Length: 153
Image 1 (cartoon, rainbow, N blue to C red):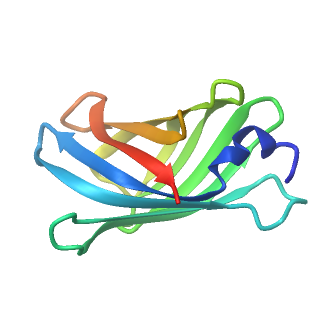
Image 2: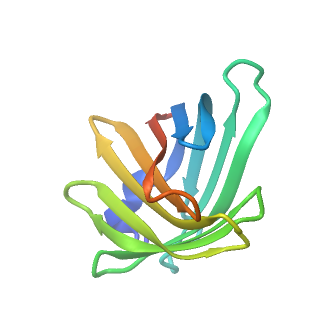
């Protein structure tokens, strides 16, 4: 594993679990989720990321995104994502290797007429990876949008 990746190396693998979505402009909803992180080339400081969600009732797909997580030795992190909706994100933030906490904030949200800002906070506690996504739009301030708890499979 590349030295810069070691601090978030615990992410490597597949995670599955349940989540909940809410926002003032939509009805609340539940979803099932799978996240996969891989590190195929130990010469490069990058994790390959993919995410997909589906309805717990119908099993139909709901959302997907993929991209790259680029950690640095100083504890900073850059994440580049493309969503199935056409939205793209560049997020920058930090990770705490000891506390296993990752905090990200959008540096760029592209191809999105309404979304203005996105934050993501990931935490690993007792083998469970949880996250909270907050979002701001042209009509709303930054507030909770998604949260999930996942377990490695």
